[in-house]
Length: 348
Image 1 (tube, rainbow, N blue to C red):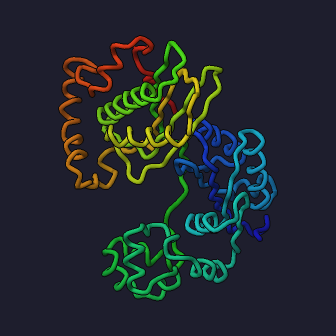
Image 2 (image 1 turned 120 degrees about the horizontal axis):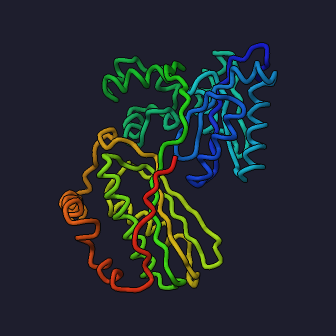
């Protein structure tokens, strides 16, 4: 275990269990009380450099992590799991393999830490996605240690020049990434409030469709894509239920956002709930050009909808928002019970 006299393993990767967007932002206020070097890893994690805090508080990284877990549980009701290591690589894998609600502390000794690393499944190595994992396994590379034993040139032939070089370094225990103080990224919210308590699921779905169209248009106008979606349902008694979902790929595609909102709402299992408002938030915002491109769906309807979106955006810019809308919303616009306008505030 790390001691205050030799604070080598001072990087903490802390993961929260299903925080809402608002709660996730509040996490950083708690973490900042211990160290100013905190980097957000949306939608639920953070990296902390505890080197200065170890000296200031005269506590080991494990003790500081315990204090943070207690504060997050007490103030925000969050369950957290973490890992401590000498770098982002080791801390992340330690967190990935830790028991829930615990913090796994890796040894300072480089040989012992590397031995731990080499025992791990290849899928845990940062930079190895599902497609690359399958490719490695076809070559009999199942663990990080297996990858470390392969010559770098061979890894590059399998994974590509730059990715192969990076993965070979990480398999050997080298991680050149630093921890940069950065809070959670912006989120964009849109709300539909009803002037009566709604019981009809079809009416709720129309509201969710409107939220998806609004958020998608605003993302495209800003040249951004979102990696996470959150739905908040407000009931007649003003209580709320909030659920979030991380997307497989960042998107600004309104039908994709719609499908996620429908799935999240359906998962709540609300049968006779009296609903007063629904709010959708999107987070993990990135520049549209930094998403790695859009994966083709090979579905004619999906691709047609994507091709149509720029046309709808231009129509909205010229004739006003909602000038062109799906037929489902045309029905909704004639009904009483809609509050016109969406909450367009950008929160940080």
